[in-house]
Image (cartoon, rainbow, N blue to C red; front, side):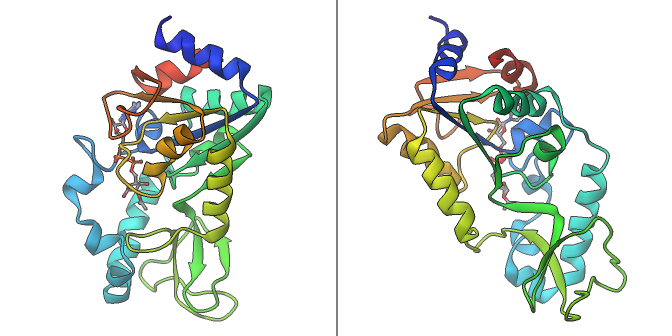
Length: 238
Ligand code: OAD
């Protein structure tokens, strides 16, 4: 049986489906990936822009970079793959979407049972009181300040060297360890803990599939690897 047909059959028979996505799914909406040919980490140094140390050193530089990314993402729309995953959730058995993407496109597409394990670029968090709020407009010239305590706000993003929120990792591990099918879409599989989800699901006996334009760090352990663009392949699963 061809890999796609096999995957469709597994999904239709699954009691519990978990999908893990990465930057590749939003690449089809025009959002740059991190490690691809036009990937952000090819032009920018993560240690200058996406670490707590970088923010402590130069919060304005970090905010300028996130503001630039917000401007870019604000012009992008969910693509057929985001929409298909939201559809799959509505049709589904038990469904859980875990994304490493911070662009908010899954929610815009209608996904609800969603864990954004690396945060969301449209949320800010106070470095003093910890409150988290939606925010679409950062006054870069002044630096954004918390309306509750006047503390400095930061992007609500998990930076390198930081731990994931405890609730997010617990929810994700529970879903991955108890699913029948794990589908991994558009991630290079190099950033942990998400990079370990495929082998974890496999160890628990799940059927694990990957959709990507090229082989990844997960390809050798998955049951089926479908090579292609997310926006072309994911809608075929419906
Ligand atoms: P990467 O940029 O590392 O990987 C993107 C993956 O998407 C690659 O495997 C590509 O082959 C694949 N890809 C590209 N275009 C695709 C398409 N149209 N359809 C399907 N696949 C496609 O992005 P992530 O794996 O998401 O963290 O990176 C993980 C984390 O590293 C990110 O969340 C980010 C980054 O540092 C933070 O910012 C905290």
